[in-house]
Length: 257
Ligand code: 15L
Image 1 (tube, protein in one colour):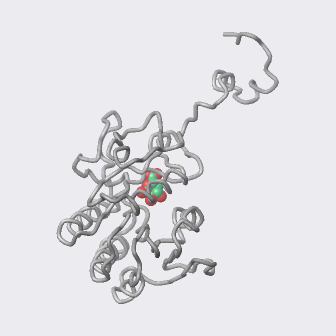
Image 2 (tube, rainbow, N blue to C red; image 1 turned 90 degrees about the horizontal axis):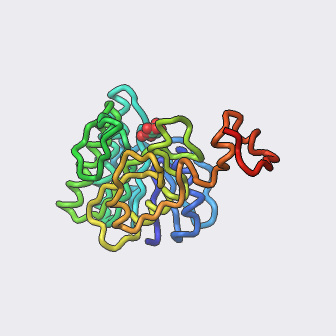
Image 3 (cartoon, protein in one colour; image 1 turned 135 degrees about the horizontal axis):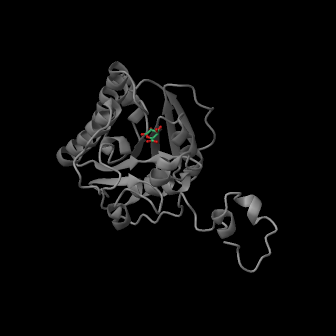
């Protein structure tokens, strides 16, 4: 991979990958509809709309791999979803085909399967159960990816991202969180693994209360480093209501019940 394109490079995941993939590939081409920080060495910065096919073709020209994060990143009115996640998504895959791009990492979402109950562990084989127009657009994206893989031989890793961030923000996110370094690992597998033709994996860290069987990611070599509830937490802080206040300067040999 000489030149890797990141769409949606101005969003939270895009800004993070801009740093973590810096120097991993000789050139990162960064694209978004919003203005981006100026290009540094080894970077190319582009600004355009995914719904503009001619612009997307120019954006894709000369790239070896694409990390497609662009589009609408949550529930929205249908016209916005249609433009960003249906038309824009199609344009990316079609421009990749025309431009001879061999590899795409697609940021799909837990919302493509959001209507599965929490007490059911699901894997990459389940049929989509979208929870929103946004979720439907991600299921559509997974279907387009399958078509372009089967018909045109493009290798695609669909990463059903849970919740990306520095730390989980609520109880639900404890089950679906992914750290920036774990997502970087997954993206690199998607771009570099020699045998990927069409795969779905869950973009989650090694969370103990995960709702997903992510054995397909493990099969591809994914070894998440992070856990939404790290075992390193102080047992005294975890035991008492006062948390870290109790653990500070704690010297008792046995904790009081
Ligand atoms: C998503 O797919 C969104 O892109 C992200 O902003 C979060 O809302 C996440 O799902 C989530 O489910 O927490």
